[in-house]
Image (cartoon, each protein chain N blue to C red):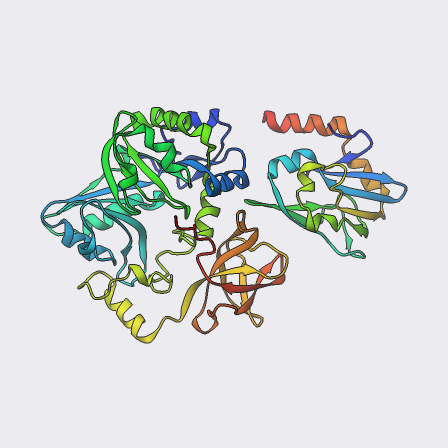
Length: 129
Length: 367
């Protein structure tokens, strides 16, 4: 379910790291909790964010959910397809619905993130509580 | 009733079995959604949806002074109501604002049945009792009824086989009393969705059986259970006000653009003098419908600005699933209420352009 090659946050974002670039999106769990996504709000290329700072938001009919940057860095690219087809977030949260590519300024921040296994464990703990 | 206790309708277990996501609403444990608000909303617009609205309150007023009592506490004119007829009205404060918005059913010459908001039921009952004439008996009936709403173009077809009552003959905002699925019921042709449909009041002991029978009849016709989230987007598309959001004790009936339920010439009633003055002088603000012009979804309580000046908040705002637009309601200064007027909704600190549009946003095609 959760791709092994990604890292995960407890806020339900994933990041795929290639060199000093991270590709970021929200997890399958997050899209399922939200329901039908009708709107995605993303930053501009060149915007910079601190780790855990909200960089955008995802909205369903009922709810607004902020998306937090897993790492500090500068936005290199945004997935503008999501503006016209927000439903991709439901259909393909880990692939087509990537949200931003970000230049990672502090790789140490990655150390605190969860592996796919740890994330799934975390989800189970949450549902058990 | 212990106010800190969350109450359950008789259909609680049914909702859980059907995969309902339960939330607290007005002190009740209610399903906010089953398959999802989008799907449920579209089911109601194109086929039919079934809603548990047992949390709604009921108050009965009878006796020789009943009509005079209703006339005094509400702004609509019940003398215009025939036996078997229903109208939308408001319980009024002396300031011309809302104690609540309600449905008044005339059961007999001097017998009325009110359907009131869940969150206001105790307040409404006490308000009416305290303002009742000597010859009117005011009875709190909320615990005696479960209420099930079936809404959508196929509602009639779904319900017809379950009763001997001639549902086709019931006009919009009329009711009948009869057997439904074998049980005594009050069957009204009303709703809070903008669609044709019925609301069925039965004894709480019969709610599970009635719900189950309706689902059996409706399944082949595409009937789906629908929760509070869909109920909210449906009523918003139809521009039906929500107490606590769009109307409350700080908004007058005229400001809420509900002049059509304000019968100022019917004789005296609570709040009438304020409304007469307001009508003569003109209201200073008005509840209007808007749609977003730029990208963004207006949500409840987001700030509203005209030319950079804060003038209020979004009272209800949401994506409109059937209309594929982002819509909302807000009070604007009277001079800024014309259709086409542009203003800004502040979404995450950014002003996003919106425009006043004609309402209701959605109106069903007449057959």
